[in-house]
Image (cartoon, rainbow, N blue to C red; front, side, top):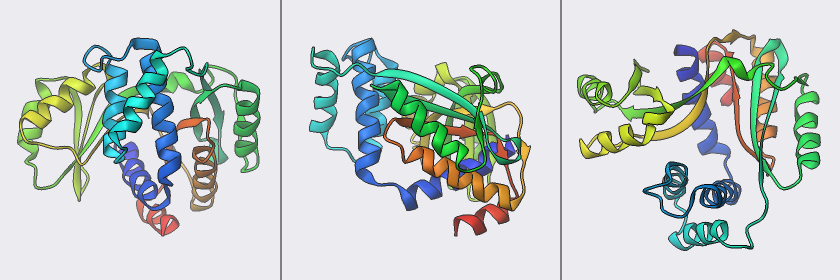
Length: 247
């Protein structure tokens, strides 16, 4: 898991430095609206909605914005959003997975293709890389938390892996255990520093510093598109080089 954990740490740093609050909120609102439309407005009975609300709170979104997004999903005025996944390859043969939510698939395809091709990549056929990724729950914890306690709680609630990342611990679980494990940690006063559901690759592709720079530019361009919810890759690069590229 080392490649993923290393990339996640840098990804979070990048998000803190680069994210525009309004764009983050727009993506979360879309997710909440879609979750409510598909699974109803009761967060206790709709895990996807519950996850969206947690993300909204973590992004300091006002309660009224969350409520409005849920109401929109439950009402007749909800826009018809389609969930799409695009797959492709970046420089160095790195696999790219792009999760989108859109009301115009032609526009989204054009924007995603342009962002990838302009930076030396190409779109692949459906299924060309997705088979090598799996949805997982991912948590990070400050080092003051005891690894033994994290392991004890985690093993009771579907933990797959725990790693010492130097400045923090990371915990990975299967997607279906994400909410129950998060609740168990919180009940035990082990508040995660971050928590999310992400795509984790089965294997990683080592890339040069130059290709890493192009890949970071590609991922940033994709994440900046309004219709893109998440971008994942199986890039692995030397941590010192990544830190240098991230500034």
